[in-house]
Image (tube, rainbow, N blue to C red; front, side):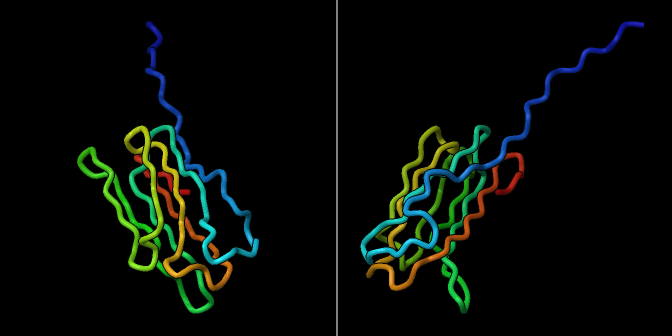
Length: 120
């Protein structure tokens, strides 16, 4: 009997958040953006970003990869923010700035799901 040969299986990647500046719990001037990158070697299916408050959270950004195109938008209070997408849906550079400036030190909650369904 001949041994069967299995095709190699690509390892599941994990979405990675990197380059966060300023670092957590740093006092921010009102006009200082929070900058970071999100990437995944297999591609991202969706990204949702919130700022957390004592009484809840604010939606900052919501986007998804649909029909081969990345579609997303910043919510009303974050229209001064920017996103740069490279490699279609694999690399994202965010610069988050609250319209009117930061009044408190924000805590970000980032939900990134890749095309394999792995969440970070």
